[in-house]
Image (cartoon, rainbow, N blue to C red; front, side, top):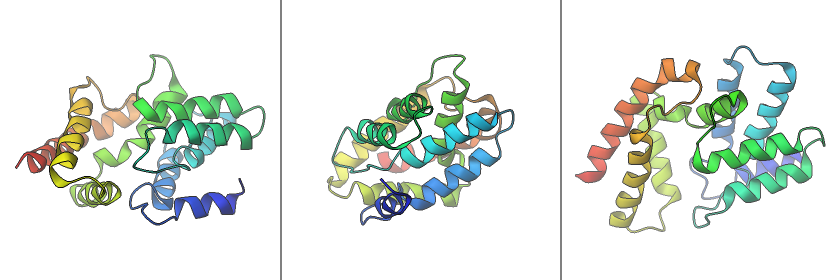
Length: 182
């Protein structure tokens, strides 16, 4: 898959949130992470680019398909790690001590801790991506996803992200949950 094909995938109709802007925002978040080697940055950059290259809101295997494409297309020395990082975005769970995993997941979830107007635009875009669900079904499903994040001891596995974004993320999630339940 060429870079142009990746751009086209992220620009496909129906991608209201999981689009090129999401990738750009993730790459910008990576720039603010300190303490990474050049190799770590190269690996995370590749994982960010590949993590949502396949995105169809009607499928449960987007991350797996994205990981497989990454493993077929990135440099041999990066394949296993990039594939692993992409697969982590399915559950957004990371083992203790997994620094790259913690950074990857925290970057992918950074939107949860955004300023309220930005978060609200994200929530509206997610609703558009799941427009194939009736309103009640969507509200129930979205609430379950948000409740799972809210139940975690920490939403952000990277301590730098947690220090800056944990409070705002919890406030945004609680606000959206109230809206979904009303």
